[in-house]
Image 1 (cartoon, rainbow, N blue to C red):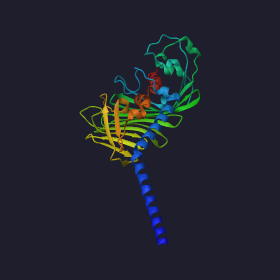
Image 2 (image 1 turned 90 degrees about the horizontal axis):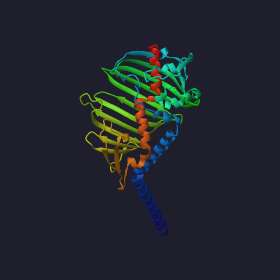
Image 3 (image 1 turned 60 degrees about the vertical axis):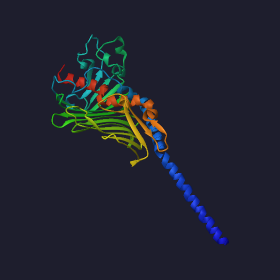
Length: 352
């Protein structure tokens, strides 16, 4: 009897352990999605803080109403390969009352030959592009502390609907690495538009925007570090007459291990590490009408977790949204790079 009692006691202990483990796993499962989204949001916020502290981030926030790069007008045709514009071009202050149409190359001197196109200029001039073609007394004291070294360049422009553009470069500020840039854009009357641009920061983060037109148009914006996706928005639209963006077919927001999906039939799904979380509830509201819905364009997303608690994306990453929007917008335009490089290239091509 004593042995039987011991056996029963041992068996009961095993059952208790199993039950205890089962409760722990169930409890952990019910909070896994909430914990993962909170943790991933914090990692994203930390990344945005690091990026915003990088000098290159300020460059990406530069914009202007000036003509940017090929594809913005229909009044000219050019074919400019890298071989036509290679060399080292140093900014030199020029006393002039120049207008916006004054050749930009007049403010640069080709100092040496090089297999790349290397542009050296004052960072302060680039940050204030409206002054680049102007002369100020202090300009003669400025140092060329910004360098853009272009290793691949191609500009074949025939019209707004037919061109190909490539710009690949490394950036340095005060002789220190500030990141690298890649732009590839192709528009063809038959095949449509393919556009990709990305900036890799010196601290390892990469911001990337892609767009491809067609019967199904796909656009995406992502922020990664190494192979880890910290943030990604992807939009699929179905062609609607001649509109660039048609009817929304599917929208996906990924923050770390969590993916939120809106389908064409306005049903929603939540995934944690690609596993469907059927008990979570999602809703999305566009506060402002836009052709490219995005967290950057006032799309609000609410998540109700299995335990009944509710949060929103703006609550989780609200302090980062403005900086994410800056990256999103700048990768559409990449103004700071295209403005200087393209206009110097045009001036060389037209022998101005």
